[in-house]
View (cartoon, rainbow, N blue to C red):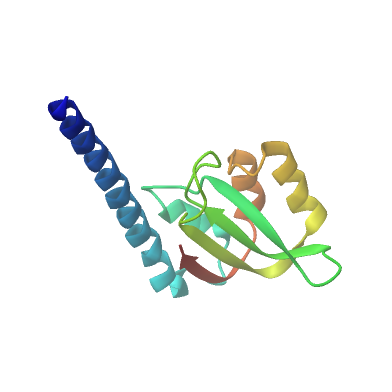
Length: 136
């Protein structure tokens, strides 16, 4: 019985360590885009996505701006599945050069349940990046 408990603890520790290590690697990888934002600002979002060869966003959440909520000035691209907790999810926050009409972003959010699919890749790809922030 003691052996089983120790083995279970060891397996749990290894799985937890691997997950934390993967998150640190992802954060380090995504942070490099923020550090080199001058290469991506004033260029289409598709250019930034094209440079992300190791990992791509899992979900896209557009944020309404202003009191009328008719446009989105920013979008959160999260690197975690919706099924996982977003509590410490790594987020790539993109500020757009021009605000996007909220009905357009809402359409894709409803169509694909916030998942970042080829539809979103095409839609956001032509939008011009104004600023990049990465956080957890």
